Length: 276
Image (cartoon, rainbow, N blue to C red; front, side, top):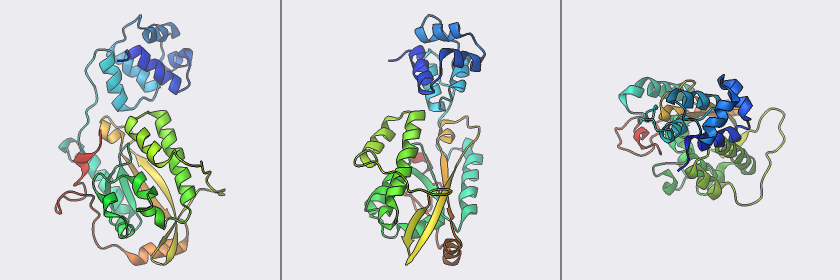
């Protein structure tokens, strides 16, 4: 088991900071940072969190730092259906609903889908049911030939974008589960580079006899103090041209998306099943 000093040094190297850089940012001496990293000084819980904050350490890993230093974890991890997270749950639900008639979904750090709005449903009609068993993984759903990959015209571009995003995610906060998913779906084969674009890479989806052009944005909670909220992201898809916008607006949707659970479980029926 690593000491708190060893873990902090790993995070500092990951952020490409010198001991002096970290010391200046945290308003402590470089000597103190050195003593903590070598185990010659035992940091207080507040000092551990002070350094972790400057290193932008995720909340899950801040708990690990505290445990390594001999302190109790500071951050809770509640399921989204917990009463304490009702405001956050309602916020996610509002974002997803407000984005209709365009698709939007929420997922966790390993890209397991927590919930989605109704506009996602029509794209799942021809997806292999095996891929829709909880937990539904967005990477697997998007890249598996049995999933949405068959609908994506520029799948090489989309795969390259996914690869870059997951690599950045792993560089920022290593995770064995996500690393295994990367090796399974993204690492093998030739490395594709996204096609040149004046503004951004679009996803071209063939559906209903039309070619839809979409781009996406990512939304996260700005000041989470709960591990679950720290790891939730919402991906919202937007039409990239008037024809695509008209297609979504004309088509509408007929039922609420669900990802497993009982028929009456509601929009967040799977919230308690987020991976740890």
